[in-house]
Image 1 (cartoon, helix red, strand yellow):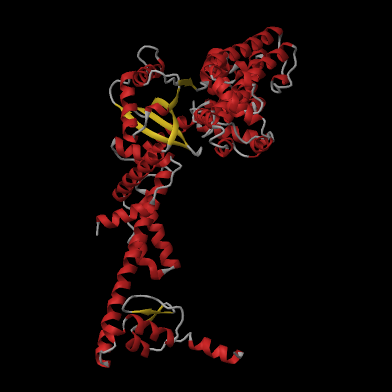
Image 2 (cartoon, rainbow, N blue to C red; image 1 turned 180 degrees about the vertical axis):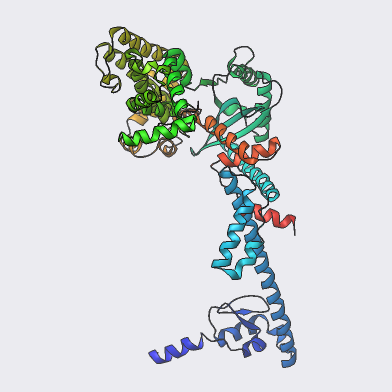
Length: 598
């Protein structure tokens, strides 16, 4: 075929002839011929193809119609198709509007914003649409983002997330719980997080429940809350491996605490089941005051900073003084009794500005209120506090992250405890390489002994706080370092599989290249069944209570931002959305809403 003839054929196949509508019952829909009778589309505008389709599928019914009857029939069919397309476009637009409303509600809660923000967001959307796409302005005006709508959407999204979690829980091989009770603007709230692992080593860490505790919060009350949540999720208690808590007496009391209640309940149904109970929390402020004896430093620095920052006039006078003295710092950090991280930064800031602060107090004739700034012993203690608090902050920064494995926490704490012994020995030898601030001052022998003793006391206290982890250290080491673990120290039922594992050179190499869960997931089920099950049990253990502390922070922000009274269920929904890593199934939510209002 010549090129000119080919171009002619192509051209013919790109043009729709209107006569084909009454002749073959076809119309042009989006650049393709579509049959009005069966709605089937053809690839090209070619009369031969249209005629063949009509003759083979519809001729028996429509071939004997007169031209007038065919014209009338096609008009009816075209009108019906146009009506159907219009309805589809309207439904599609309505679904888009509804999905937008759901997604914005989700974003509002995820960022702990007030529900009333929805109306402000809508105003912004309408203004933007008026400028960028005025032809679609009506769509944006129809998006409903009132406070009541956001409230309903939050309830729908929360239920959807609960359903997703329930499905994941059903696939857990093992799971662990992290429990914490606290007070967020009264009443007390009880948080329960669940961490589970599937057969394929897929880890899920989610908020299982947040319950408002009215009245008493005894171990019995808390057990009832746990049972209620477990029943709702349809969790099999036999798969429970570990419960991690803070040091709240209601949780830890040996006779009436929650842990005792859980243990008794589990033993009733399965006497052979042994649950690991872990206390997993470093209370730094208590350590600073009771163990390291830093109360004098902390109180003086807090009082000093508050004197400068709280009183506006003092602060306005202090900042120009820093500028005049060409200090590298432009202000002193403000410490609200917030927590360890804030305190560490404040101590370091005040230490670096101590000369400028002394000059400022002298000008204000307030130096007599802070005689400690001229006391060599106090400055020595201050320098020690800056260094040790900084070191503790480094440890906490490593421990305060979501998804931490128990072996990571244990080895970080163990490493820090060994460093404390080294620090104590070094200070005893007047070696301050790891205490750069203390190196800047003169330290008397009496203070050296005091600092050595403080470090040893801190070591002893951390050992006491994390003694539960020492009981499972062997299990943690086996899972985290299977190729260097001594086979003689492994449980007898795992020894043969462990030998096979350690002798496989390919697995040794793979272990170095992939994350721990993925490595164990890749092991042959038949050859390493017990090794894999043991790894699953250890990998679900919570390595930190950070997720609970982070959630309480979210709760405080959400409570203050809601600005109106909500029920416990509504507040629980807000917290669920704000903390989850799961994404709502927006398609399902929109479809459910459409069916409900159709």
